[in-house]
Image 1: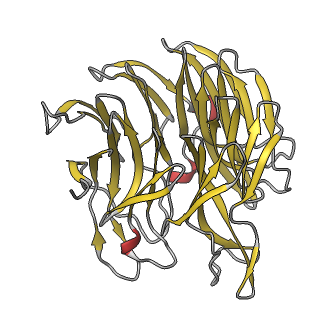
Image 2: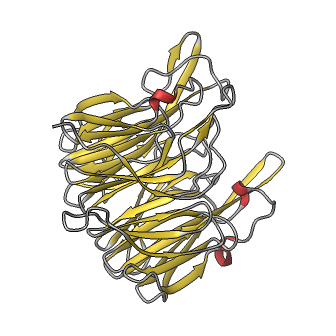
Amino acid sequence: MAPTQLTARRDLGEVEPASSRQNWTRSAVAATEDAVFVGTAAGRVIALETATDATPDGGERWETRGDNPVVSMAASEDALVVGERGGDGLVRVLDTETGDVRWTYATADDVGTATRDSLFFRPYVVDLAVTGDRVVVAARRYERDGEERRWRSVVLGFDRGGRLAWRRRVHASPIAVDADGDRVAVAYNRCPNPEQDGLVLLDAHTGARVASWDPETGGDRRVGDVAFAGDGDALAVASHGDKRGYLIDFEGSERWRLDLATERRVDGETVYAYPTHVCVADGAAVFVTGNTFAESTRDPDARHPDEHTAVGVDLDGGERLWTRDTGGFARSAVAAGSRVFVPSAQHFREREAERHGVHTFDATAGHLRTDDLPGIPTAVAAGGGVLAVVEEPVEYHDEGVTRGAYRLRTRPIR
């Protein structure tokens, strides 16, 4: 029997097509045991019932509207946490059954409002997590004056009722949050202050620093992503500083490290690629690398041989289990059970539409299947036996042809 393909579940309206290069995040998706939630560039949040044998077409549960693009989501069984980019950098906590707003918080009160009418300068709720009795929020705002660039950011811990329990302000750029029980890990990818570590482990109840780690490579590039590993006693870390993958314990000590896309001489250029994502499943860490860059230019002719690559690594020994070319830039890496899902969007230098799709991996054995898409996958979630993907239209600058559409696609996880 042929595997079930991703099917168009819901039209999400009109949106400007993405271009050859990666556009900023403007959509989000989350999944629980019985529903899929999608947030759009127009500020809509839609809840759809997960299809079952009894209700094969699922059905809409509710819809709400906001004023700014929904760019981050975290869901528990009873609460959906939604983060926006723009305006006040609003966080909304919604009831998963009714869509009713339980509480809101304006992160602009902490990071400030945009100093320029530009998307990149607006308050941005980067990532969210729900753990125990805490909702954790990471938000940032960027500003630039000539050659001087500044990031103002905050990590916030709320109780489920919306009371602010703790706050940590930093002049750095948070990029990812993961939570497990009473611990929260925060990854910072831009740290102009050399004393700011790229990885910080916090107590979820108090916000107190438990441990920290940094690749200590100089410059402001630090960490690209983080995921709790093992029995929750270690962290898998994608390092922007030295383009390696790490397993770190809670004392900040390295258990192992692995070269992913470190500097290499190719066709006369020294090139590298940043490890952009990591997730953990079934005793393995899966790292994903991004675009090729070079020491001398942001747009090199050469290609790093390990750009746009997924790598499975044994958690116990740090041994490479498998490697797979993903074909294009990945916005995330998501784990569910023993499966890992990696979207492949534009390869903005090669511009081959055949690269668009979502790859499914067994965490320890490697590639299982690829679901092709006409547009680009920009947000992925897995839960309740369902894979959910936001597809966005794309128009390469040298073609003038719009591929794909703005829609939610789903399929059963098998």
